[in-house]
Length: 102
Image (tube, rainbow, N blue to C red; front, side, top):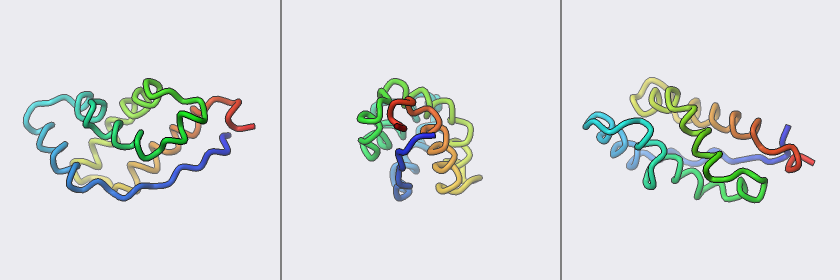
């Protein structure tokens, strides 16, 4: 298990409204969560320590996209931010390279 501890950032409520509009307007979850102005990019900038722990942005983006169902439930109002983000935090922490945990 990784020694890295990531904080739960404040919910991006204004951005979430835009992301929801984008999905409802026909954009894919992949582009909304993984695009340059998507949730993955937003989180990557808040969790800068991930790079130092050995996780690449590409690997991080893949983790975010693997959580797109849970993240969609948050965006659609079926889950809280804490529920969705906590699940994502767990996935990330389990994928930090072993060297970072030492």
